[in-house]
Image (cartoon, rainbow, N blue to C red; front, side, top):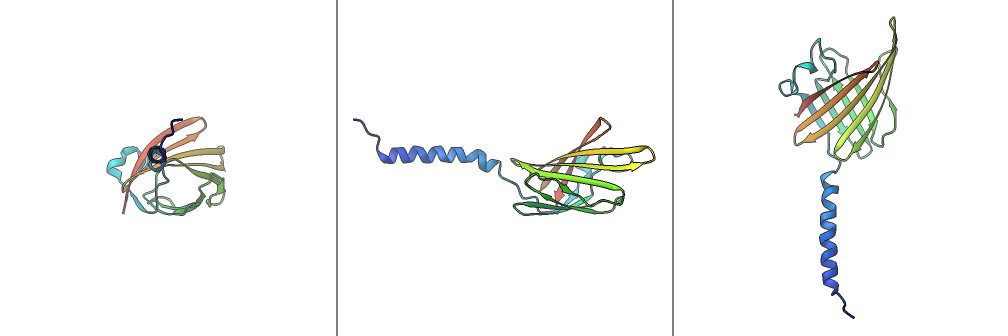
Length: 165
């Protein structure tokens, strides 16, 4: 009977584990904590001003725990608002002005944070529902937010770049 030495088996098991761990560590949950300021020069023309179809905040202050993500967003023309997302994908209510209802959910997909939210309100033109989908990725001190806004079957997508300060 031909037996493989124990050290050979242990060696190959260690090599296999090392290579198996590479994809898991490459897709670990990134830290989003910190203050992020919108970089207008890197983001493009359609993300700010009167013609912005996809609005982005000027600044975001984020705190993160293993189970929650707290995001406080401020803009020049909008009242600041804060949401505390559960990172397990469960739906939460987001504080909104009177007459507006908003809910959201957030989860990590590998190294990407995905936030989906729905805002609804009534106006003289009728009931309005707006869906938002945001995909956040971090590379070093740069946060990229790709946001899609969908209303009445029409969608518009823009990307904003934030710098960590």
